[in-house]
Length: 325
Image (tube, rainbow, N blue to C red; front, side, top):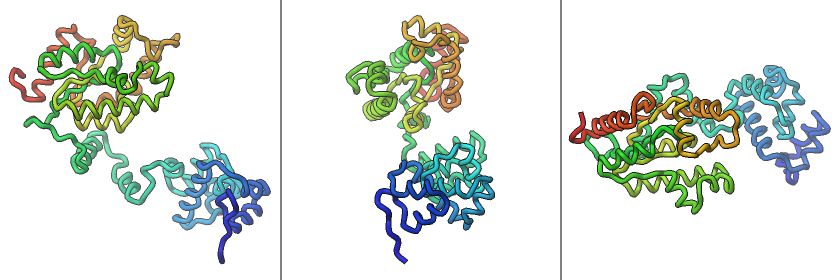
């Protein structure tokens, strides 16, 4: 028996009739244009239910929601709460991410990979990430016998000393120094503040990615001072980790704030009355990503000269350069 698609709704005539049996509101919505996200969500619920071989009644019973509520959800006319979606996901024996369309649930291979990696510790996941990068040719094979990339990238919050120490290290190694923030401004033709206020955070991240790609392409050897938020975009941070030897310049929040104030720069806390709490929150949110760097140096524990000597020794040892310990 053929099915007639109702104009603008994506529902077959049979679907609309079934919807009407559950709720008059569904019948009215059948002929209306619905939110694409809700439609896609409903399609995933139906697909998962079919994959599990469960009737709508069985899913509704297991999820402890009414069958009418589930019908609304499946036909894309029900804006369910997070708790209801969680109950439906549990009834369908899937994750909330799979229900809402996370990319890692888009195919059987993705799901099988997730299952293999689920529950693994950080060290194992790190080895897998590196191995996958090598397999896909995105590992940024180093041009040195040490196996370390001769591009040195300094990561950390503003006020960690990336610019000052980066320039000192570049001079010592005799390589180019790249201030990635300045390169971003060159791409955009305006300041970072203007990029974010005029075009938004997403545009800024695109410029950041382009600036890093160009720095990697142009400089086989360099010291790169990165913006503090470079860890916010996983793709950009993956690129950095794959093609650079990374050093996290760590500092206590109070030292970060003191140095930022000395620079006359309070972004992004300019309008905040609780700048220190904001800074601590940002640091806490990024620390797990910064810790993926190859090396970590505490810049609060010593003088600028002492920190530079530790950085110099660390990098020279990593690259097996003459003069290293």
